[in-house]
Image (cartoon, rainbow, N blue to C red):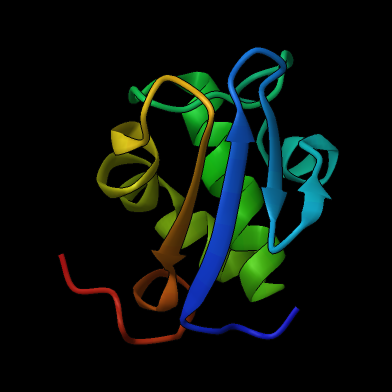
Length: 105
């Protein structure tokens, strides 16, 4: 997937399932890099499930392990931890986290 500015992220809280632009995101690929959460994804706080979700999103969107690993913790804190602890569908600007040289903390 090519990096782009905005994604539509949908989450179902009861099952912890996530979709990016209508395609389900699974944790397996991100868990091979770092297994924060064997149980999968979560959001709405800054724990292990949200860390797994942040890593998986940036890995999928950037297609680059180094970018994903470098930026997923700030992405977790700034974006994933602030998602509501319920079902949601939101447009999220990921450009600062996936385009080289754009993340400024």
